[in-house]
Length: 456
Image (cartoon, rainbow, N blue to C red; front, side, top):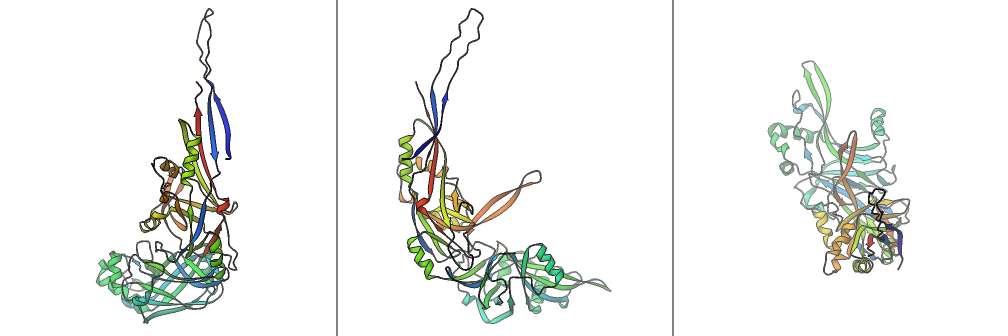
């Protein structure tokens, strides 16, 4: 057992009596010891488990195909409803003033895996029925669209090449890369007419989806890149008549993909033989599909060790769990996920189904430390103190899963000119491909507590 007493403080109580010159001065000394103990000799075990599908809990879209040595073949398309705008501009505008309708998909600079220049193609289809919910990454859209409903096609890349300089400059300054697809002007005029006839349809996304179920964006050509779009919307371009002899050209976003509507990345993954072989012997995580890692925490050993060392005056200070994690060699520079969730196995499904956040008793998250090459779950004191309350430790207290995730963050004002990031949801990882391997032999649980010995 490697238990380190970091420091021992002798508490000395001095009693002093005020007196005159005839008084005597007495004192009493009580020797009490306060020790802070760190125990880090616990063993963690684990193994890879397949993760074939995830539930859609995101408003981002993955689009493209890669075939990466050391990863596999990943294809992602998407289906989506739209949140309509309930404030379309109709003053000085007629249906014949609608010039065009554009589908815009915007990527933050660098948010892709693969070759930025290789040309790839997409087809855009109009959905014929509302999407189901809940919806998962293995969703088959076959019954939700017709091949005859192709409304647009586009060859695209992940650069601003070919854009007018004035427009390219705006996106460059904002560190964004757009992909725009021109849709039929008749569809834009259809939206406009429906708004004029029934503006209440645009007040409710569910009602709107019954009338316009959404779009299916499908890979049509090429391979070599997967892009992550954080903003997808439809915009009308039209002419607005200000006065009898004055007009202006306008652009209005009339609907967008938001967290309130159904949006799903339809993904297919064929895992490379190298990864399949590695997963047999090494705990790994592969995302957005592929593998999670199940781990067994030594709950009973933690309790036994603590109870054998603690006394009547013992306080649990902290518990941390650091997991060494290395990137896996591949030819697409696929990196480790930024965030990792550690969640009790029996609570994994409900955690994502109800869009929870970490409670620091049964679920925790960590950020990948590129310098240390590890994930450290630093707020696990609640897990241990919960164990202390139990009469018996069960398997569910020990069985956890390491799962790649994304964080939904909102910023709230916490002071003058200061904003604080607040995690409002932890959702399944839907991002560019990522993977990492764990070294559980070197994983380290640290249990820290203070104990005081009273010397009578």
